[in-house]
Image 1 (tube, protein in one colour):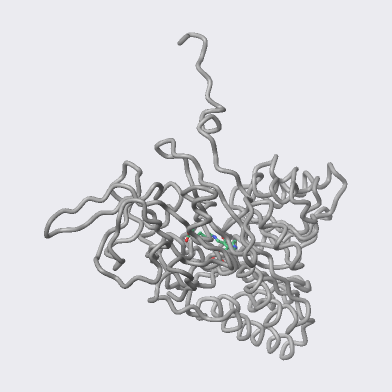
Image 2 (spheres, rainbow, N blue to C red):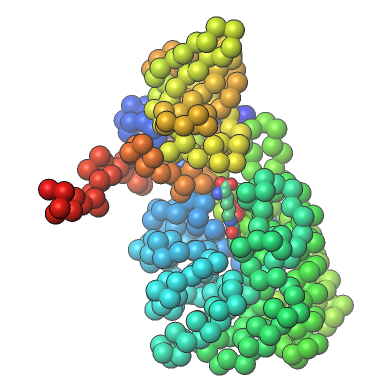
Amino acid sequence: MEFEAKNGHLMWDGCDTVTLAEKFGTPLYVFSQTMIEEKCQELKRDFVDKYKNVRVAFASKAFSTLAMLKIIQKQGFSLDVVSDGELYTAIKAAFSGEHIEMNGNNKSLEELEMALDYGVGRIIVDSLQEVDLIAGIAKEKQKVVDILFRITPEVNVQTHSFISTGQKDSKFGIPIDESILFPQIQHAIERPEVNFLGFHFHVGSQLFDNQSHLAAVEIALDLVKMVRERFDYTIKELNFGGGFGVRYTEADQPKPFSYFTDPMMEKVLAFCQKEHFPQPAVVIEPGRSIVAEAGISLHRIGAIKELPGLRKYVSIDGGMTDNIRPGLYEAKYTGVLANKAESAPAEKVTVSGKACESTDILVKDIELPTVETGDLFATFSTGAYGYSMASNYNKLAIPEVVLTKEGQAEIIVKRQTLDQIIQNEVVPGFLK
Ligand code: LLP
């Protein structure tokens, strides 16, 4: 991986990572605002400013904090939320309601009420009961809600099966079956409390090939045509989800956004011209691709265990509790010794976490300079689904998060304290 080093130290957005670890402690997530903004600029240049009537909605599940949402809002992007907690974070960040889109395969009544009260711009319907549920709440609140249907386009996706979502046998979305989807469309068209805008799909995550997206776009466009033929109704919006892959290790060869968006738009525009259709709004929902590579994690090396002829384990002061992805998806990462960033590799080690779990291995067999207790290990590309999937397993505290911008660094999430870990626990009277 390419990185910048100065005086032997890994530099991140103009900050010396060794100094950051000393100042803020470890484990530490470090996010470069500069790098997040660079990704947003690329999206603006090659998508938002290039085409008419298109939007980017950041999938906040990848990294949802007040500061991150401020960055996204400043870019003029929309936001995808999937729960009361993500919506609450957006509300607290004063994210404008009309720019929020709500996804989720099992939205509760309370979540939908919260969404309507805040005036979220779109609700992406994911199940058959949902139209009536939304319409009922809307009627009570005397509102009309813009909705899309999330469909399962049934395309093959080349990614880990755990993060593949577009197949028919999925808990997400509504299958494109005559008897299932079409009655719902008719119902949505008829109910005055909902304004049926169009379709949404999300085929999967961490994709390097555009084929699944393009196949799904074709399926969505076929549906647009069918809706016009059957219901004499014009679809006004299509949402093509996220899923654009990023670089975790040298083996990953991510493509620019335009590799996905240009041919998708080409298909949409060609369809509209051929079928004499007004161009629908097109939305994409990238999460990982905006934030993954902008984030690194810093861990202090503690115990070193050499098993002669077998393996050398070097343990860090965190692990699966701040990055579950290796344990959950066998995700591969790479990193450097941040305090020996310019030293040549000298040994092969396995970087292991401190949770009581054999799968808590962060990086297997990585070449590093001679590792000593007290060294600082930096893992690259931990910005997406690292902090957002962190847990308190083994009652380890959720680490601090720092945002950097050209040499400045500020805390955006404070380190959880031990008191906070147990703050909601109660001992019942009969145990006292
Ligand atoms: N839109 C919808 C409806 C989604 O379900 C997702 C991700 C996204 C957008 C954003 O996808 P992205 O651009 O980040 O690939 N925890 C897993 C990833 C789960 C993704 C779930 N949905 C991981 O760490 O790989």
